[in-house]
Length: 164
Image (cartoon, rainbow, N blue to C red; front, top):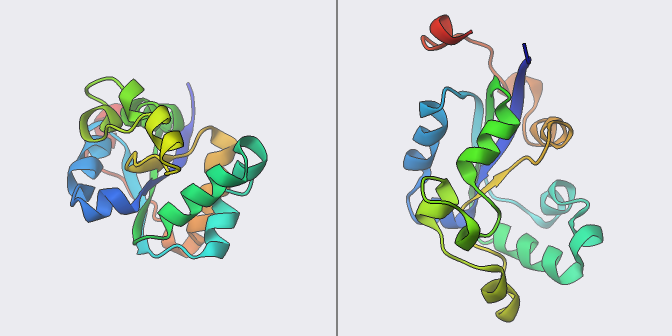
């Protein structure tokens, strides 16, 4: 049996500004993921650099600058979620990076519409509502970046009595 994992979800400034936080959070809870940490925060340039530490190397300075600037436009809400195979399950719920490639039923497929061509042509970050850790190692790094140990909680939900 796979062990429980923790992963990070960020509701980006577009999700917060559009008032979607409650609806999006419900999707994770409906899937049996447990919130073990939550906070609202304004990202500054230092936190953007630490969070997206390898983005410039992987995708270039213009992509890093666009995403970093976008993430600093307004507050974000960070969730630390826990569950069986949490990283993969969150990624499935969120959908692919570019909303035009996301299936209906995913967060990005239901609530966003930007395409890679649009964002590149207009030199914009993709407004895709959420960040989700890409793999278990990234999740561990990101949860530790965003939350101190005292900000993470261990408790049992009623659902866990029936599923674990």
